[in-house]
Length: 241
Image (cartoon, rainbow, N blue to C red):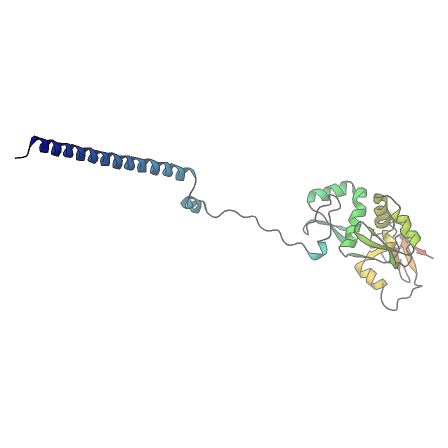
């Protein structure tokens, strides 16, 4: 028969085991409760920020249609109104060529105050290769390739150092006006006409006809039927010596 001391020890041991079991149960309850809380929190977060399923339900993200690449001949062109890069889809006809702008708003501004932007628009015709230089913009004489000055991004050639000096010494705005407005008619011509004027075997003494309306100079035995720049009639041309 066990002694009272042994019984006490056995009872104490049983009590301790019951305590340990309770502790284990408490830990399991705690872990279960904590897991449930964390799971609920994650569920709320996933509902607040759309997951992969929500993104798939919303469909593919919208993307902007890429703009068409700018033509090579327009890469150096700038809008005569804003100075920004031009769009190949925004242009107006000018002097038989096309002048490009960055937006339709700039076209409206150009038309409302054309005199302010005319020189830069004509310079663009040269920059884009639609017009070529055929003579000195000061007096229309044959140019000397080595005598030149950069005017609004264009290498403009002159017949003499004196003509080049006159243009260089003018204020920037007057310089552009002098070359691309006042001297444009006898200094530049549409690409096709410029090529014809430089054809091999061309007579250096052939007659020159100047349009009294815009100053355009035509070379040949007779004036053209119509001025290619301002559309003036043939009788507006005066023969130059």
